[in-house]
Length: 470
Image (cartoon, rainbow, N blue to C red):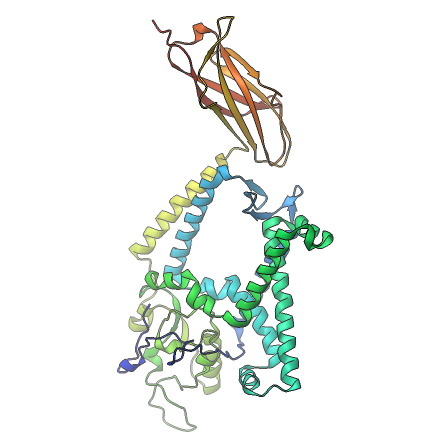
């Protein structure tokens, strides 16, 4: 969304990114250490999310990870439920549902996900930034340290910070790798050594250096330059969206406050505290901007100043443009209702498919390039390949029977009578039918797959034969 000018001040429009100087160089951001009730709530939310992130790889269901995203081996487990490549359509539908949810959430609440739940922001502001404050001090001390010559004190602080950043990046890399290969494989990497698992070790090294560079140098640029969601919000927000907003009706014209004066200006005393605490370096008083991640640090800073000068809180607050300009309350527009309807349809479809999802998936195909065979006893046979995917964590005994028409299944090689947990079983067999069962070139056949006497899947295919229909 474009920056909004203050009334009577067209010069407040901004045509450049806050972290780039007029010369085109990187403008380094030194945000002031935030504090306040919203920051405390963000801290607790971050603790909960970080606990979930780092603790989930150690949680197992029936001996398997609670969450696994093994792209290499195409094995996925979500909340203890295994998914196979055959379930890819469910993944696509789930992603589509999530995208629509994000769109709806953004239309109503703006970019609050970025400031409160995005891993990039949580790690940067709630982990790495806190360590930086602890070692180097607040923003003024950090500026002074960076400008100071290389003394033993500066070398000690910088070295200590980078060592801490690298160790945390290493822990994060191990955690992300655990989501890909599983905690057991990660333990083997540690026990057996890197040379026994070179692929995993290389992945660990790459992840570690990527996280280290992101949180030491790239920082807020990940939100401003790389993240597509920041661009997406520009076309999703409207005047009814709830965002972090400055009440220019109440705050303008801004100006310094003087003791005992009969103030004729707005409530904004131009203290720049909202700018000082911003992790992306913007001035929220210029309106909703691309860089704003809705972290609410500016709300805490402004409310604290309002308390000190005796003005009401809420000069910067969660509000829509319509609320500030016209004092309108939030309302559900036709656009929001449309998104809700689409989301409900997708969510209902996804839940229905998940409920109806079979634990076993069977594929039976005629062997390509093979014609039917006429046997000496007068019967006709077709050759088939069968694949049975066991999506559960239990071994399943199998019985593959021909339901219709009446006939016989004859295996080539070993009979398919077992499929291991979370694996694929394959076999080859002939279906043999009497000639009197064949009345056309393609005869539909139905095959039943049973386990412990209970039918777990049923498939249909075609049987090729001579056309004997009179």
